[in-house]
Amino acid sequence: MIAARPTSVVVAASVTIAMATVFAAVAIWDLVAGDTTGPRLGTNYYYIIAAAILIPASLALLSGRTWPRGVLVTSHLLIVLSMIALAAVLGWIAVLAVGLSTVALIALATPSARAFLSGGRRDNFLDD
Figure 1 (cartoon, rainbow, N blue to C red):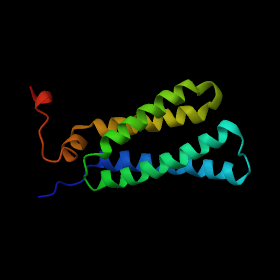
Figure 2: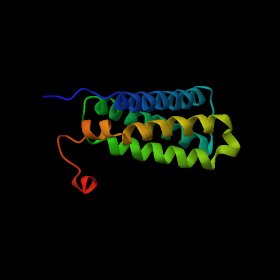
Figure 3: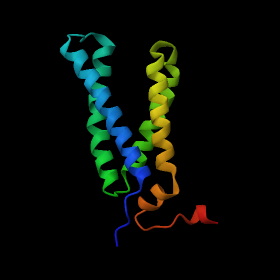
């Protein structure tokens, strides 16, 4: 029997897909606009590659695969930390990214998401 997909998993995947799409769109915009100098070029390629990883991982998360949870948790933790470091430069954009990533992290940590993504295994170390 396949368990129903929890809302928290849908929220985490949707937030991740939205953020990855926006990051990639801004990077492509910069590349098309001709901003291809130095570190900015590398950053643009990084966002495009990250989106190419995060979007399929989010779709796999929706299908109940277990491996995307670690990818998404790691990426959202890195987003939170980097946006906190860049808050003085990015302002409200950093606050928005931290808020969305926090929502995704909380959604992935809910008991319903953990049960859905456990693949039928029990977390014995958490049940003691």
